[in-house]
Image (cartoon, rainbow, N blue to C red; front, side, top):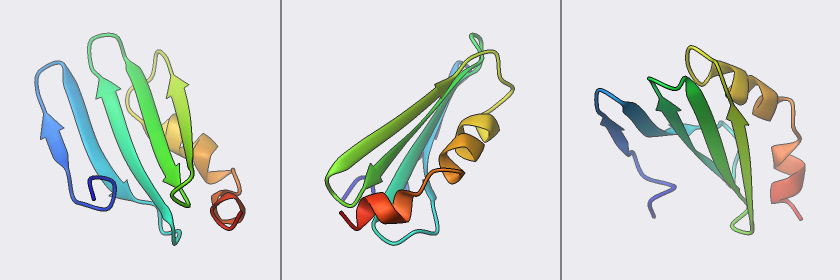
Length: 79
């Protein structure tokens, strides 16, 4: 339920929110630690797998999301 919902929170130190992946069976959560510039995206894939991508020294979560978008999440969800 959490993964499929619309969750968002932001403080002075951190931002976390769910976002649409555009892929059936794949939900995602992004987090960004503002002071340390650490970003993380976690994908729940097909109800069976968690894929987490972490980056450092970034201005946001874009790089982590771009790496994830190059992966074949739809194929993994179909397993």
